[in-house]
Image 1 (spheres, helix red, strand yellow):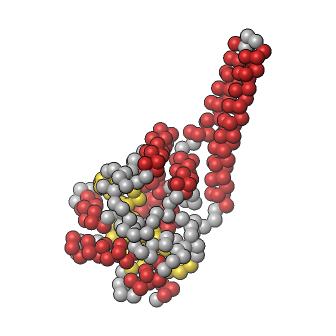
Image 2 (cartoon, helix red, strand yellow; image 1 turned 45 degrees about the vertical axis):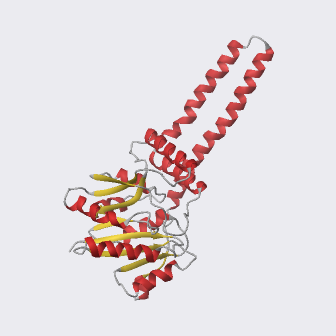
Image 3 (cartoon, one colour; image 1 turned 180 degrees about the horizontal axis):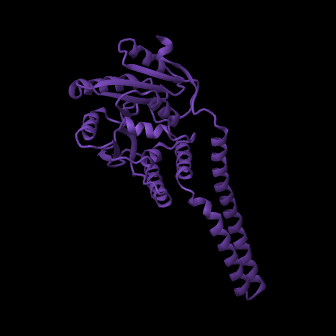
Length: 306
């Protein structure tokens, strides 16, 4: 019997965990009765009753496992912990808020077992229900990163996917501490099928991703999968040499020359700060990798309880 490990990162999801489990079990009983499920809930340092509810579910269903962090390490760490703990032939990555609808699992499973795909990813057909500003910046991000990176990023792609064990092993073989999963999923390659679905609202609670957090995540994604921004200071330097030369040539009067020089100096200062920020981001990421601190620290798992 095939086994599917369902990895579910959780951070303060006390309102959604039970609803997710109930719906996933309904789908399994209705359409995947010949497949064994294993649930791996990764409690990312929740401060509410998320872990207590997971333990309560496990008390009646031993296929439910959990990994609880010592503090909040972030979703990327939770994803890695869940993938590392999984033992299934296939691994599904899903959010607990039911924005990743379990009813798609049978279709995803058939695409791998019957159509020969290695993984099945999902993407939102529309961004209906999402704030307009966030949608604009999200679409802009995908355009920018696809322009800069050799790895294709799919606009609207979700973390929700089903993967063969070989794909999971490839993902876990990548050693970086600062992880951008959407890029990693694309980087490892393999034969991938994409399924689209309409955006689904959270069943309860609110998103833990603020605009600032998403912006920082996007910047890290660009730094992880492209070195093109590092060439920006070189082009800026060349541009400044040209601008100063033009100012010297066309400065017919001291007044016009002074105005032009002031404008160029202002532009130079602003752009120099941008260049320093770009270099600083790459240096900071390298510093984090060199420290080689653990991606997460586990406080307890279901084996401690047993």
